[in-house]
Image (cartoon, rainbow, N blue to C red; front, side, top):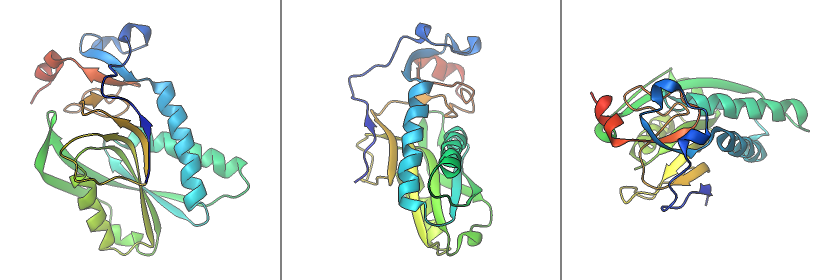
Length: 214
């Protein structure tokens, strides 16, 4: 079973004043939860683990938009470095799928999946790159759609997995961090499209949720 770096329930993160955060968000953030440098180091190790498991065949990396794009880009940079400097290398091609399952800070009942023509994944080794898995409903819906197109192999890597009673027990193949059931933003994770331009993963103040609520 995959394990990520565990962040305990009682951990509250770091004083935001010890980090560089955009001025326009300073009053909105409670704490820095996962610093950018730690994200990058963990992502580098995930890249190595993925290449050990999947590095003998062409990989199609499927980015789940929009929240996964930053993790996706950094993960592929590390895989590219392994391709250039390791004993073996494989071609990596990319594809994108967009999923919307949140409104404000709550999951919605309706999951909408919009993407490229997924039939091109037939017979391919697919690496799905996701930002966060909470209930697992969204990922299970995507995997069901992918299965219809008969890929040779599907592996899932998620930067974050939340510990929540809502989860039916789904776990991806690779996990960056296992975190408490907190709503976090930054590193392309958004709240109604805001905070994607924040390098660190942070905890929002409650008043910020009201400020940006739609």
